[in-house]
Length: 467
Ligand code: ADQ
View 1: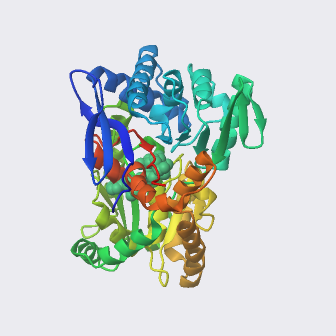
View 2: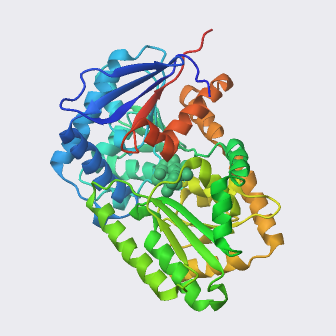
View 3: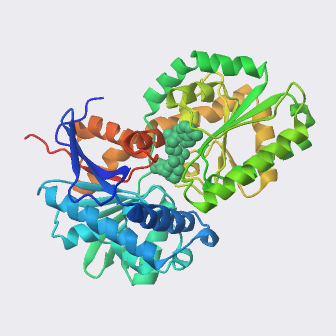
């Protein structure tokens, strides 16, 4: 993919160094500048492991009990944001548009403003936003809400997240709401819902190709005619894996006709292992998988195949395509792109069935999936049974509706809508650039490519148009 010259990617390098970089390390590739900064171990622990992933992540996923707030970690979060904003401010040019991504960088615009930056700055939150009573439990709630108001535009995955943010601003900061605009202390911020999507057509093409690959053929052979159910997630407590497995076990116990007739493949890439809650989850799942397989296995059948490594992206499409059921049951999720990828990968003539949590952002659009409350393992069990026994005609009807949605709200639709809102107009010539950018920003695999730890925090400087 050819990026448009003039674009810049700016963010953490994913590396830990003895000293925080004074200036970004610059690499040019095909006219695109990658500007990255190293963090010290202490910065990494306070900013990334600490405040971002042990306070914000659990709270924003409705798990206040898992939230660990420590003032020194919040101070580290602010200081990394200040340092990164200062480094960007020194290389920004007047016409640049700045698009900041995700919860690691909420105060970024405040520090850019303090450094005198007058450019348009937008922010997109990839994860859910908690309602006012929940965000109020965070000791830094008011400060973070007001930091979001330093942006010109704030985007959320769903209308509900956008509304919860506006309600929080009104209740905690006394903000005035006029339609999509929130006014706090003389500043106006537009707040809107802009669901993220995937590059649906290329993903579909890749899936068709991958279905013929040696890996997919091997998987197919190993099934020996059994139906495949598939789950693909990061190993994260927001993804609801224990309830998913329990739901599957209940389905097997209750509907004996599926014994020996279905294989569940769960690919769960280990993630954030520096955070205690993730290690605890790993152990809980090891035990649960052992229980289920011990209880139901036959000498020639394993009901649950469990892999704790990431699968190469080019394989996944083929696996999705041959899976009769796609199981996506997070307890809470900003969007969940796996749900969309599963839909895009299906054969429209003989499609599989998507079982989807009501509390994934994707449920707003993918209403023809089998929607479940992921807190109820029996509801998951019922949906799995319904999916495995669904007639072709109903599978086709549901898939056609899901497919239309996935092919409409694509990655480029998302990006062009955000940029149009940020600038007040659209520039179709930038979309190719943006597509590629999104692959970097929004897909886990791409984050892994740009960062040793599988996650980068980044922002975008839009290409200047040659007029
Ligand atoms: P994530 O929590 O990482 O992202 P998700 O959107 O489901 O969640 O996945 C991102 C990508 O990673 C997908 O392209 C998926 O295929 C890939 N992936 C996930 N598990 C994998 C595995 N085990 N092996 C290989 N690839 C895997 C955050 C938010 C989401 C939001 C996205 C984008 O938490 O709610 O949808 O950002 O905004």
